[in-house]
Length: 154
Image: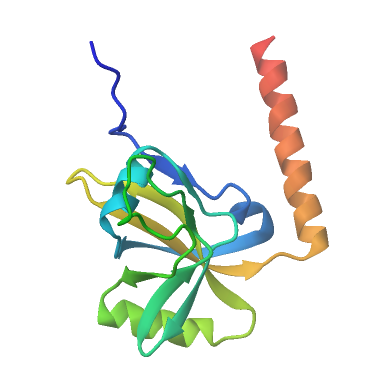
């Protein structure tokens, strides 16, 4: 039987987001993609680590998200680090834009997934940056959970 190249269960996460940021609110958005970008996402070749969102002309864009060029793409292949437009309702856009203008809040991508209809979606979060002592608390909590799970397993 032929090997299946594209996966049906895509869930690409930004694991460092919850460590560096306090996630306040989450939104699921659509993404405007080119033809070969969806194929690369279905292969699981995307990186959200350096991504962030910004507002321009009443629209929201994501920058810094790396989608690896498709291996079988031709000269129509996409650029890896291009800006991509996110699709939100106008009411959500206005709400987010007013909250981002508050001190210390930003929009960051935390997950790319394929929904049940086969469309690529991005989950973004309204976030506040953590201070060093908050990061230390996160590390302590994670270590405690790990120790408790080890004790329960034995």
